[in-house]
Length: 335
Ligand code: UDP
Ligand code: MG
Image (cartoon, rainbow, N blue to C red; front, side, top):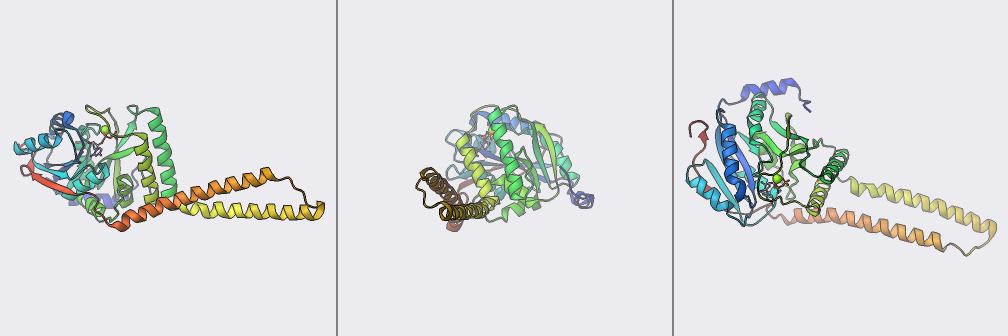
């Protein structure tokens, strides 16, 4: 997983501040049931670390008590802030909002539902101190997911890496630690359609994986379904590769070549044996097949045109309705 020359890593390690500010970025969508548990676990996971900590909660248009609860904890002295989005924009947008509002030398993105174990964060910080700019969690055991989800996910990663020519580690989620310079790199990417896993991989920088077992969600309900996942995968593909568009060049060329060969064969046959009427089956087959291919390729072009459309509109990725500041970042152990 780690292909970084040691020179770079060692030079980075020498530049690390002794007590960095760590921003915990937490996208929150209807997580009131689990938030206190989340705070308790991150608190105890980070106790004893030489870092100052701030929480950056992004309320992605929750309709439950999540925002009130976070507001109350911030008022009671929890360090960090709550970024309230104007409606539900989805996790990708929420993470982008969190990155924008984080001030840390290092940031860690983690889910509120404790599926990204906070107990791993100290290990991530150690790897960062050793000089890595990106430390990502690698799910070794996805047994909490269904076989169907595992299968489709693995197919997606294989196809994506083959087509997009960037190395997106399979089974790496959004759970990761990033150095400030990686955050700046991500924020400098202008695209509106934010497929974060792809963007994370695209920016590069010295990276290392930490394997972990992904536990089931602690409380509340997951928000994914297969239709959403399929659209998510489509966004990923169209955002990172144009192979599906170019594929039709070869498909079309092959079809045309075959059609020409068949035409030549027909001409020769007519010249040799005279006109022969039957041929309904082959005509129908050709018409139906090529009509299908044309629709498919137009649809595929449509996917990219749709992306151009979203990018051309230049709409912001999310809208913030309020930022509520809590206590200033505090060194753990001193709170
Ligand atoms: N989330 C979000 N906006 C959404 C959906 C989810 O901010 O529209 C947050 C959610 O609160 C959680 C994280 O993203 O912190 C992961 O969501 P979930 O557990 O539903 O996804 P899964 O673990 O099934 O991938
Ligand atoms: Mg979850």
